[in-house]
Image (cartoon, rainbow, N blue to C red; front, side):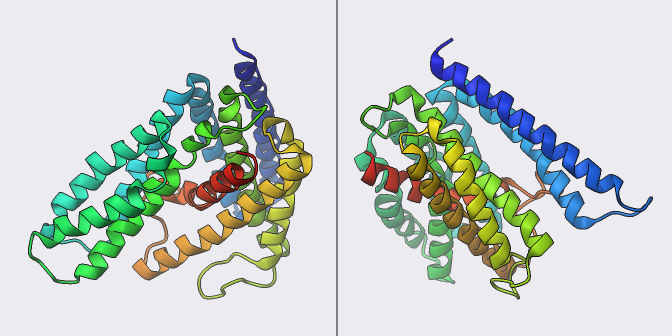
Length: 314
């Protein structure tokens, strides 16, 4: 077993310990309620913690499998997220070929380019080539009805579900002086942990002490909850600095940046769901929606985290 795998195993044990504490904390809060009563905040908190157990086990297995396991995991997540997103969009028969190309050509190619480390291609392939090619395919089918809306929705789905998501495994390809390449998996774990824990604490503090909603008619997210979530993410990032090439203060700053981007991304997804009149993207995970609901913050944070890492430390 390599030293990186040993660190991953240690991290897994540490995260399991944290989840155990969160589970006990939730059970204690639940036990304090009157018999037969439920608190929706506590139930949502516990559901999130339970889903985290499954995510952590799955993600750890992928981390141990190395680069191939990570790329396959996120390619599958992109496929599921793209399917969820496109379910809510306008489509016509004329778009079927473009959608098939998106699923079975654009998505695999994007992850292939990431796996090959072709940065010059995977950073422009979707926003340039795919965005130009797919509207041509739809236009050639000859149906102009709501054409611009259909094209824009397909492009946005690819941007969110494939392009942004693929920047998580792309962290494996960032070349940082003095930071061994096989530790890239720890950088991915760092990004996901600070964003998700920041989200969880934003939710908890927002419900407990939050008073000022950021967008009252769109989301229950509050400025107080967001501030607590970002600060906690920065503190956790500082403790996890050993996983990164950033140093303690750099890790805290990157954690705060990723957490902030993720929380605003969460608001964007809330706006899309409100526009479509749905609560969740799908019902894949009972009580927690679908892949997009679980990963919306990470999706928004990933490309920013990747490019800032590349710009400052790469």
